Image (cartoon, rainbow, N blue to C red; front, side, top):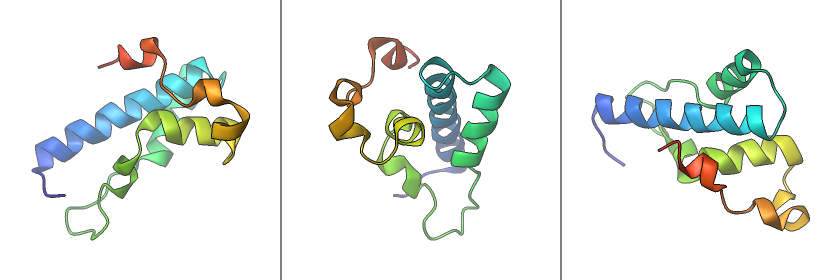
Length: 91
């Protein structure tokens, strides 16, 4: 995908915000730890990185649920496959 630096940073910040929200509300992390987990999951990648933004192929909900419940969360927790309305409201 080709995007401007501003588009990339906006997407990065939105995914970090979503990941931190899930880690706080579903994973039980305090806000500071949830934000740190989001930074670790979504590090800034330089424009010349050939796989920049590959993590965006699944939304933050998926990556956070995987971190909380493991690789098999889809089968073991089918109720968590789709993001909650509260998560969607983050915008």
